Image 1 (tube, rainbow, N blue to C red):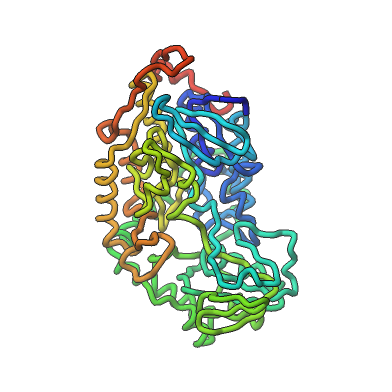
Image 2: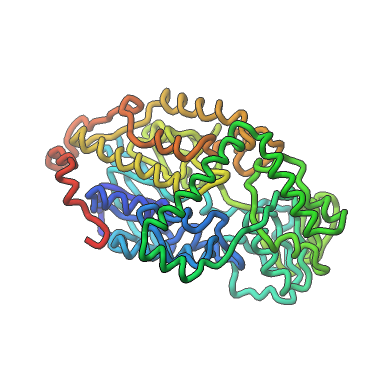
Length: 518
């Protein structure tokens, strides 16, 4: 990174959100941008999560960009290695590598009100940018609970998202803490190798069968030769999930049918009444994300597995003590305890117009305008921001909608011309947030009787979108300038010539945009 480098756009992170933003910028004819990545390769959460059995619970053809269909998915639900390979492929096909800055962690971003630009401090140097697109994602910073006595533990400790592949679990006494999406994939993979597996379960999840299979060579050939079939498959998967949304958002009682099927799934796999009782949730299905596995319940019935229906409360040397007093010996602890979702660490590194960090602005709860922009943080956007998560479909759909909003945001800056910035109006942010929270009141996530990672410390659901992906796409198709304050530089920046307004990217000029393979 050169000294005092300036770019039009700085993208933070190179997962689905960051790479999608980079592709979209190039398609808009913008090449003056960088993608800052703290790790040494692309992939985001699909690079970091390499634990045994890691796979996606969304069908492959829906968990990929619409502008980069992949006819070569090997399975209906892809594993981590296939998704990471797909993101590497997207990086190469769309010629993104010249924009990537690896091993470059952003330590602080500060808004310069005089120059109307962001100053970005990184581990690789300093740069400035007119616009910042934060695509760090909510599943990037692991959360390990503060367990009293953890410092006294004599064995190995690691989080599922930081799997230690050099540590051999074979023949060890292993404690798995947590029963989320990662844990139900890890447990069946390691159960057969460890001497003893103790699962600390604070709350049991609802688990449904995983209808996974290999995609045949004939299917892949057809998708290659007739691209429409790939789009059709994706469209069908999307449509089914759109039809399911109302049960989650408006009529949670309809999920009772699914709940009965889930109970039958437990009964078929778990014959021991005492264990079956431990594994049966007491909240409405869908309140927490519904998990998919064919191997989780069978693994828990094996003689070398103990299920402790209580959270881990204390550690004393090699002894783990649950909240109900149950004690277990362990050589290794694997935490599958999720991520900092409602308290994203990146927010502590963003300093806005009034000198406050984004974390301080969100101290009473995350809120943004259309899941993208925050009042007091001009020309700053986030991908997968507050209330953009999904409980039953593919986040790629939401990401692509936010990319539409990002593209129009930059277009509006060009149309306004000169040194200019857009700052979300507090009233607009509050109005959007109020509407979202009003809709949230009758959703299963708020009424289902569970405590989930969707809720923040105040019990407010700042994570999930209470509607269809179609509704969200409509809400983010265009930037409404009425929801923003337009900021202009009072005078030219010292040492710089006055800027001419950029040429608007009209239909004719967009023909010159940088395309994939161009």
